[in-house]
Amino acid sequence: MVRLRQLVLAAAERAPLEQALRELLAAPEPHHDPDVGAFGLTNAVLAAGCDFVEVVSPAEPGTAAGRWLARHGGDGGYMLMADGPPGLPAAARLAALGVREVHRAELPDVVDVHLHPRDTGGVLLALDTVAPAGSWRWAGPAWTGRSPACAGGLREVTVAVPDPAAVARRWADLLEVPADDGARLRLDGGRQQLVFVAGAGDVAAVTAARLALPGATPRTTDLGGVRLEVVPLEEET
Image 1 (cartoon, rainbow, N blue to C red):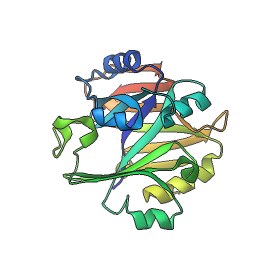
Image 2 (image 1 turned 180 degrees about the vertical axis):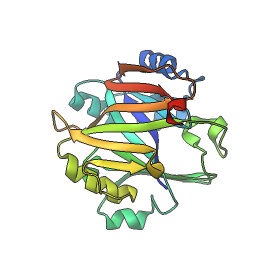
Image 3 (image 1 turned 60 degrees about the vertical axis):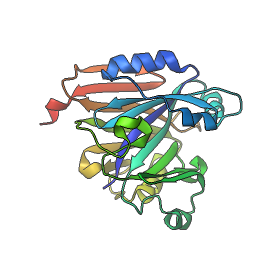
Image 4 (image 1 turned 90 degrees about the vertical axis):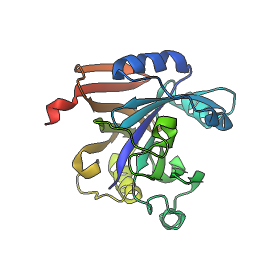
């Protein structure tokens, strides 16, 4: 089963957006990963139920995120990370689909592959497989090699692209899910929806996300170029 595990926002300045997201999500102390410095970035990963929202900001000129920010014209939804079975990020499968890899990491608890956006038609997409199930190294030591008790998370993500139907078919192949609902894909056994809509320009971006979190007060706000809606997890039962 494949699920969206992490939404990544790119921002010119990380700290203000990090603080605003922490308040919106009622998130604990974020994880700041020093390893993203290899990409010329700083980051913050915030827990949102069993899933995560990350903010990345360029720390030096010439980064991929910095170039995306310039093309996009400001902060926005830059990347999605999916968690699935071991075959999902397999090099042979991706090569057969005609997708170039821009990054691959193979560690004892995770395989993480980033796909070239020009080959996917959408935002930057990472395909991960983790062990044990539910763990998530990118969120820090508390989630590395283990899965803490949690509930809720991402429920719907909207991505603006030039050709929604074509990109939905492409991502259905990449994520190994049916493409039987127009420009909408159903993930995580139907608990999540990934929706593609027509964008105003030629730069793909996540434009909206809905999260269901335990005890949350319903709220919708625009942060980092993305409309974020938080609803109580209890409303799903």
